[in-house]
Image (cartoon, rainbow, N blue to C red; front, side, top):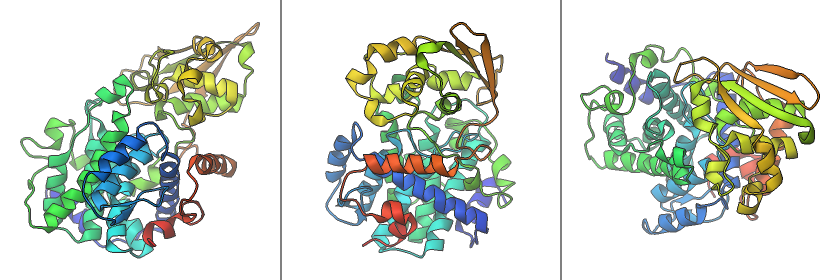
Length: 428
């Protein structure tokens, strides 16, 4: 079998999730739905909803965090944006893919349209979709050019939706690849276009499954072909993923994000939160890190930042953490982002090269803190807070869910937070 054939067989196979994997899938589903509810009123969300309402009539599926119902592709579009817009969604770090964002948004719309499904059926589809999206990222050897959470995400999400819909998997994946889009330019400019690319991928996943069910053809060699995924979007060998299919479920290697900011900021932010320093006594903060960290969150502080830019600006985020002891999305307003006290603290934070030239490396990282009248202390960070090697404790998990609940609008289905699996699989 070719690597693509192995992937297709895996996507369609009968699976029984091992107990710990099933528990991880359920836990991460709850985390993803919670951040989606928190994103209902985020910047840009109203425009996304308005655009979705122009996509056609119908009430097939729910929008996370509200009672609004939309056609399934439109609901996936809205929910994909809400899940990613606060930069709070789970991520497979080595793959550099927010795999649950596209998969949960698209799969939830498909399940709603069907009228619900069994819990295990949903969790298996979720795990398969996350595995494929993460696996494509793991197989990549090139630096990020395209926005991998969208380009790999649409393929994983389509696999999950096609399982639920009973769509022909080969055509669905070919159509998903034909819909793949999203570049890193929105990331560079710090725009809400970034979560739009997740939204578009989720919508495209539902549409790809619909077209495949209608008999519309998709390319049969979308990943390894002459103009396939590993020619145009990423360099790499698909076999490095597919040769290990079944050995490990990659959903169990996904990291939860404790803070609503770019994941590359979380190693430093977690250590600063743990140190609980007096900002008035901090003279300098320096993060020695690989080039990808500097590329993703090493952007300079600007008083006229957009919220999307600020969530990817470690100097500003470090200033917030030193001042507040947490990152609250409600601080990302024009007056707060331009506050002189935060600007002054941000000016004391710098990211520096550590000599690592691996374009995809996230570690090692070392935080160096110089306090007034004291020597510099160095803190080696072995694993980012929220990763499998440094998971959130019960209090940290509760703090995240409490803040998400606080940000979510009134009137949402209470099962979103109390019983997310029931919310996901049993639409009312």
